[in-house]
Amino acid sequence: EGIFTGAYNSVLIHKAALLVTTGRHAEAIDALKKYLTFSEEKGYDLQIDESDHILALDTYAAAQLKVGNIDKAIATFEIKLAIAKKMQKSDEIRGETMHKLGCLYAYKKRHNEALPMLTQALDTRKFLYNGNSKFLFETTWAVAATSHAMGEKDIALKEYGTLLEKMHKIDGSPIDSAVIQNSAGKLYFEEGKLDQSIKSFREALKAVESSGNDLLKANIMLNMANAMMARCDFDKAIALYDDLAEKPSLRGSKEHYLALFNKSLLLLKKGDNEEAKLILGELTSRRSSVTPDVKGSVYLTLGNISVSEGNIPEALEFFDMSLGMLSEKKMEDLNSIVKAKKS
Image 1 (cartoon, helix red, strand yellow):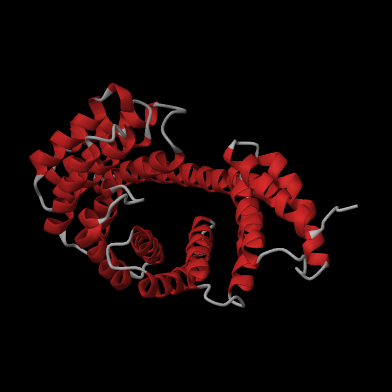
Image 2 (tube, helix red, strand yellow; image 1 turned 120 degrees about the vertical axis):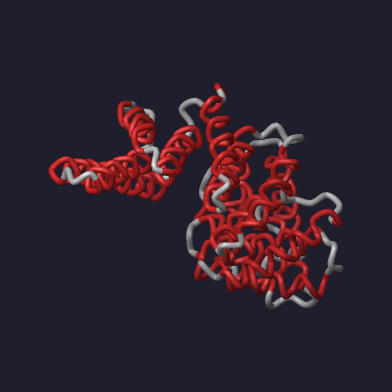
């Protein structure tokens, strides 16, 4: 007696929330799964406060995210959003839920669903918070990053502009300023705004120094070198590529190989074909450590060099090897998708 009464459910929900905070995610999922199944059967008429039911959904979604069940977390937030839309004075709950749901859609590459959801979240939060709110800031970032990924560059430029203007005014910003500057720099680079791009990458490098994030720093340096090359600042670009290629901590990383490959492209641009071919040959000799997409680009470049030298049979061999590498990359991506669906 007492099982699944209002009082029992309330205690169960709060216990599950505590389990999540202590890292016992599987136990929390098991407890809430029974409650949520029963609540659905009863049409959510469980004689508990709405706030407790919302807590149950948030806790269940958080636990599912912790164990890697993204789809179940999405489904749970969708249920929460449908309930919140029927609640009075639920703008804060709706804004938060739409933000989380939009971010998860973006993570799953469901960008056509993510951007409208995040835009609604941003509009909702604009009415709730002042311009320097961290909640408004995180949603602005999500809209900027998602629109950038979708190729909606006008939206992305507008929102990145807002982020760059506001980021030093936000207390407890949830987004690393180095990440924002690096992302903005990449967008400016894509738009051919090289001076703005390099300025953003410089600011990103200043910001990343204190974080100790070596891979992010390497990515920023690589992006800045690429922008320097595009602006024909060849000596500065080569210095950055060499710095990246010589860092022991980056050996074997994609940034290390991209620095070497991009340096070879710069040398070709300068007409130093022989030195470029030496670097490209070094990259193709590493059988397993260079990722298939990078190696595919290396073979493509070697093929183009062979064409320019009139060696068509050799060019065709290189193009075939490039196709083989890029097909391997496609299979890796497919296998990743299959594994994700099985999890």
